Amino acid sequence: MQGASHGVGRLSTEPVELGVESVCRATACGQPDVAAAIAVLGLTAMLAVVAGTVLTRLDGAREALAREATRTRAERDAFERFRRRVANLESSERAAPTPTGGGTNVLTVPSGGTAVDGGGLADARRAYRETVMATTHYEEEYDETLATNVAEEFSAPVASALAEEGGTLTPSLRTTLASGARRASEERTDLLSKLEAERSSIEAAESTLAPAVDASESVADRELSRAAYTDLIAEYERLEWYEGRVESLLSDRQTRIHDEEGDRSNWFDYLYSSLSSPYPVLSAGASTLSSIDDAKSALASAACNR
Image (cartoon, rainbow, N blue to C red; front, top):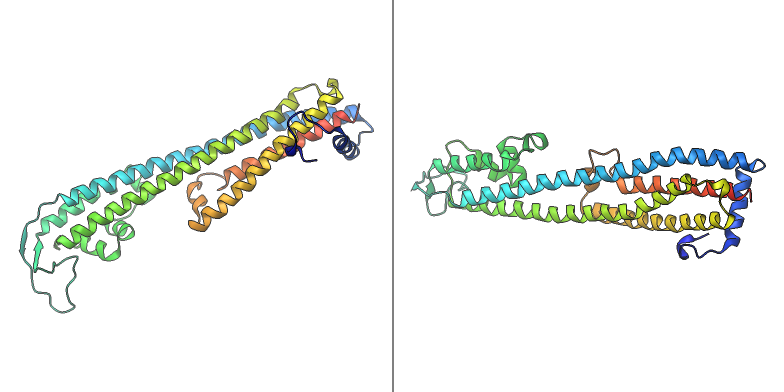
């Protein structure tokens, strides 16, 4: 029976009756009162657990996203502050030593033969430590030296030039640092957009899963042994309608996961590393489908006594 193809309460009772009969046989409805009572008692306990699990998984996903968004904003702002500080460093040029073999490193010696004095390089290092490395989560998430982090965010040559004691801050290096900081800040802005899209996706998932769980719980709250047969049939198809919505949600979510992980390997592992599963919507959806299935079984067990 495909409840998703019908409106709620618009029933074709014949397929439902056939389904009820098959469930009756599976649940040994030679003792229908006992079977229905056992099903409802088990359903009540199970649904309390399932409802809490669904909400906990989605709450955990939201918390993980909020934490990552907070850190990403902090990094975006830190790189922007670093860019401004580097751009505002005062130039104090002097004659540069003639390179002895190996050519000229444009990051440390400008083509015009002059270099900014070593104080500028120390100021750039200080600026990096007081901005990017000063974010509250830096030690927990990175715990890297300045050279290691700059190599990751910019490049190994830039890290080598910036970390060089006694070196010079050339105009080329200063420009490279400023442009690299702008790029790093823009990357965080893009990441924030992706995090917001994922947050919206979690909210949409909850708007589908929560009412489906509520529908299952409502079955456990009813005295099914006293319910009219037509009411049992209506409730059964109502659950099938929710079942169709949840299945559609999970299909769409699987497609989203495939697309996202095609663009960013381990994206969901990265987002949800603190959770028991990197796929909280799929996990919560599977639990919801299980609760719907159990509720449908309880309805069928009650109906077979009519």
